[in-house]
Image (cartoon, rainbow, N blue to C red; front, side, top):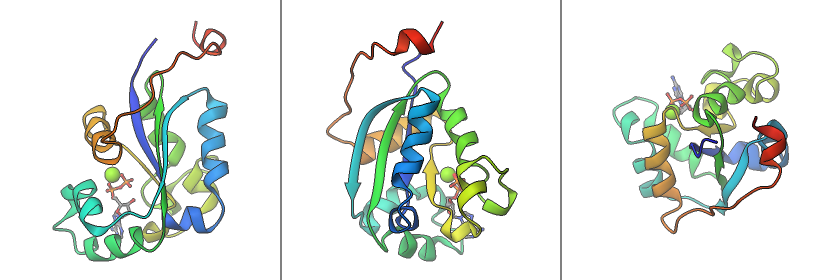
Length: 150
Ligand code: DAT
Ligand code: MG
C-alpha cells in the first residue's frame, strides 16, 4: 500500500465558518489516513515560504493577509494517490470553476476565500510537510486499511 502523503490545510475562512470537521470528514470517509494535524496561527514568514512560488504575483500581499487573518488547520493525509485525489476533492483554485461535490464547489465562491489548500505534487507535499511539521508526522498502522485496499 502506498505511503504517499499530502499536506491539506483549512484556511482561516474555513476555520471561521466552522468547516474544519466537514473537511476532515471527507478525507476520513474517503479512506485516507490522518498522519498529523495542527491548529496554528501562521505568520507571514512561514506563509512566504509556503507560497514562495507565488511571490511575484500581484495577489501575493493579499494572500498573506488572508492567510494570517486567523488560525489555520494543517494536516497530513496518507494513502494511495492522495496528492492527486486530494486536489480533486478540493476542486479548482477558483471555486466558481469547481464542480459541485468538491469542497470548494460546495462551500465557497471567491478565489481569495477558497477555504482550503492541497499540495499540487508529491515533491511540493514533501516540502510543505517539512515546513509545517518540522517535528515529523505520526507513522501508524491502521487495521482498517485491510477493508480499504485490496
Ligand atoms: P491552489 O491553491 O489551487 O494550489 P495556487 O497554488 O495557484 O492554487 O494559488 C494559491 C492560492 O493563491 C489560491 O488557493 C488562492 C490564491 N490565488 C491564486 N490565484 C489567485 C488570483 N488570481 N487572485 C487571487 N488569489 C489567488
Ligand atoms: Mg497551490
